[in-house]
Length: 330
Image (cartoon, rainbow, N blue to C red; front, side):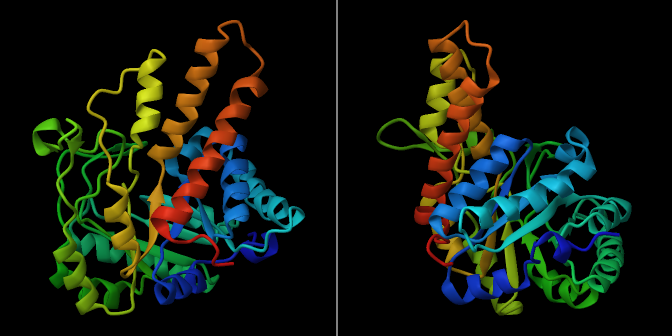
C-alpha cells in the first residue's frame, strides 16, 4: 500500500472547493506517455493552474501500473524542481470495477472514478458506494457518474446519449457519498462527437454541434448546491489541428467538438472539473504527421516527439487561460 501523500500528490477536495469559489474548472488531462506528461506539467506550471493527471483503464493497460505511480511522483518532482507550486492529483478515469479502483488507490492514486453508468441505477449506487467506502479510508476522493455519454474513447463507448436525470442526483449523492459527479448534458467522447445530421452549418460552412443542455445543469445545481460537477467528453476538437492532420495524410472528416464558449460557461458554474483527452491526441498526432511530411527520412523519436510536446504545451496553456479559467490561480 502506497499513500498518495508519500508521492507529494493531493486529492481533489480542496481543488474543487477553490474552483467553485473562483468560478473556473480544474483541467483533467489524460496522458499515455512521458512526453504528454511533461507537456501537461510544464504547461500547467507555467500558467499557474492546478491539474489532474488522468489515467484511463486503457492507458493503464498500455503502461505498467507501477510505472504510472512513479510517473505521478515524477510529475510532482518535475514541477517542484521548476519552481511550480501547483497542486497535482493523479486520477483514474472511467474505472469500471471495484478491483480496478482498489488497485489504483493501493498504488498511490489520489482520486478515482467509478463509472457505474452502464449498470442499472441500483447497481450503480451499490458499486459506487463500495468504492467510496474503501477510498475514504485513505482520504482518496471518488467521482461517480449518472447518465451516459455517446461516443468512443479507449474502452468506453456508447451509441446514444442518456441525459442525467436531475431528480436522481440528490438520492445518488446521498446514498453513495461521492465527492464529485460526472453528468451527461450533451458532451461526447472522442473526436467524432456528433453525426453531421445532428449539426448545423454556420456562415462559413463549418459544422456547429447542438448546444449543451444547460437547463439540466442548472436544475442539478439547484438540487445539490455547492456540489462538484464534472464534464467528460469536453474536448473542442480544435479545427486547426484537425486541418493539420488532414493536410498531412490524415482522414478526420466531420470531426466536431464542444465550442470553447460553451465550456467556459460551464466552467463558471458548478462544473469544477473538465476532462480533456481527444484534443491532446489531436495536437500530438498533428505535429508528428507534419514532421514526417516535412522530413520523411526522420527516425529519431526526439525529433518528432519533441515538437509534439512543445505544441501540446501551447494548447494546454491556451485552454487553461481562455477556456477553463484555471490559469493564474496558484
